[in-house]
Image (cartoon, rainbow over the protein chains, first blue to last red):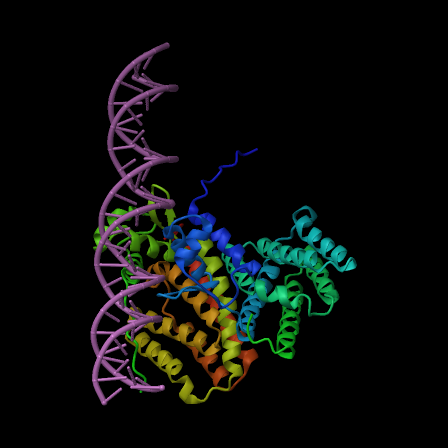
Length: 225
Length: 225
DNA sequence: GCGTTTATTTGCGTATTCATTAAATTACAC
DNA sequence: GTGTAATTTAATGAATACGCAAATAAACGC
């Protein structure tokens, strides 16, 4: 076994992790402003690592640095959602196609299969939080199997940006029965090494999800999250 | 007329611009390491703005911060090129489709048309540098017409990452006659508001370009740039 | 002469200090 | 009482200072 190189976790790293958590949990609500010095005190470090972390998160689209206004947590509009889902549709479909080209054996696909099984189980129990977590796992594992590190990085970034919004719509949407069927189809296309079918099915899956979410936001007049 | 708000250009901004230039021009060669203090002296500022700029450029994939090794300019491998071209293919094809859906009038398409004309003119004079500049303009204008800000940001980032490599292959490849024909096809599909055709043509264009470049790198045994 | 251990140097990560500039508040005139 | 100008406040942007960890050099034992 390879000995794990335990990376020295710097304050900047801690700040990134912690700020992300605060944003996702809503403790730093969308649209709110926060002074660097406040955040520094809150996380128990000086402004320097906070600034570096904020710059990193800014480049990932989670917040914005505005002179003399502090960092602003970026709200997500329906238009943003459309943009992000379009990107996810394209890149995940590519990943599905590439994954199917690899002729993966069943052992390589265990994580993907487990994610699907977990979603089914969660759906039976109507446990939406667990379902969402497994859904995340399915999509990120799919992208990993696609074998393109840049696609991985970009889709992870986009998923982060819609995380808050998804948490809201999760309890407004119908039970994701269709989603689970979609996932099984994509899985089988990959297992049977049918790239075109994997791509098409996943594209259809993502487009359905996009239209459903955008419809929900529209109907509930949610202009930003 | 709206009065232009002249942004105060910070040292960090200058550092970003200047470091990008140094990387693209090859003055900071791929794979080389540079101490933060050296770069600070070179650009006539302290380490602080250099570090912030480096973090930004790191998140854009141009370089890497390594403790006690300074910043390392990331080299591009053929595998990186494949990844990046795959991403560009997907997202630009999406942009072409969306652009065609807008039913743009001729006035909206002047910049795109001009880029094509400039490429033709440059090709006649065998002026490859000018051709490459106009080609860049075509692709970024195409993406702009697609109307997705995130696609714009991502494709700009990916283009930056392959910029050095493209400068090398530019003079190894055959004259880009096929490329110019491709561009005209995509343009007409957009002008005629034929989304599916715009997407398909642009995808084919990008896939051809990818295979050509990867073939060149392979034949010339270029493992990293 | 070679390997191992110790000492020294070096460069980053972070804190602290300082300067700059936008915002806010107050004072004053009308 | 309202609008404007001057002054104060405050928050960022940047420079500097410093401690610690890693890399390198040196010294010692074998």
